Amino acid sequence: MSAPEQASAPAARAGYLAFGLTTLVWGSTWLAIKDQLGAVPPQWSVTWRFALAALGMFALALIRRENLRPDRRAWPVAGAVGFFQFFLNFQMVYQAERYLTSGLVAVLFALLIVPNAVLARSFLGTRITARFAAGSAIAIGGIALLILHEYRSAAASSSILVGLALTGGALLSASIANVLQAGRQARATSIVALLAWAMLAGSLADAAWAWIMTGPPVIDLSPRYLAGVAYLGLIGSVLTFPLYAMLLREWGPGRAAYNGVLIPVVAMALSTLFEGYRWTGLAASGAALAVIGLIVALGGRK
Image (cartoon, rainbow, N blue to C red; front, side, top):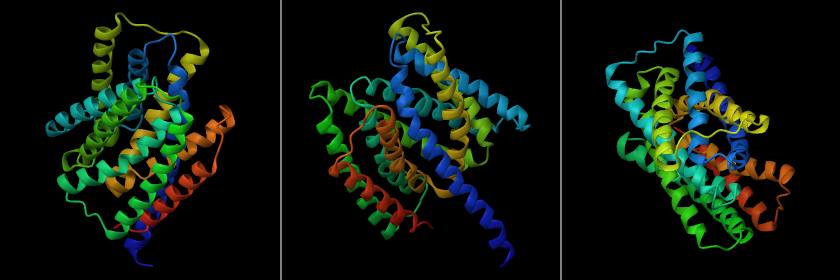
């Protein structure tokens, strides 16, 4: 085995480990987000999550002795990622879960592969191979079946359109942030430092929005709520976002987003255990197609 091959093998294993870990953790966050929707307005729940996450990310940067003063060209990127990812995206996700089941929002977010791949091709010059496109088509077919199942299971209401619109806006915002993180300026900056400043910027925007929309800060001091904030802020953000940012840089936005195909499957498996989710033939077929599409698409990575 040549030296480059020996060097690439650990990197490949690290990539797949990061892929699996982010999939499992983010597959569980949908339940935690749903549990946060109670006495505390969603706007403030998002704020507490990313205020804690920013503190955790700065602490991680200090532990790793990262340079917390990025190149001046990276500051606009950090601000834009904070705005699109940690403000717009999550404010809309939390609001969407007021109108849709958490499973349906998770399923819809699997479509992140589409805007990620299109935007990456347009702005980063990333190729979309025939096998990647075929895998996308298969996976999206599976997602469509899962959406149909969730739609049939959800209570019929005109508000479902509001939830779908919010989820669509969140998808677009997340995709823009993903492409920004995979760009040349972001790649020249420490992942942890970039995310620390982005989360700080996002949490400040979240706090301003929360105050405008709902008034002074509100927090629930119950152990359950605080544990949820800690899990979402530290495990669901500080641990996973640097891993996903690494995937964005190494795999590209389109391929990295394929953890979004498995996340709703994990989310529904957890829902089966904790919420009594009922699997049907339609749901099982959709999950199987999504996994097959994932395998086909990942086989087409360049």
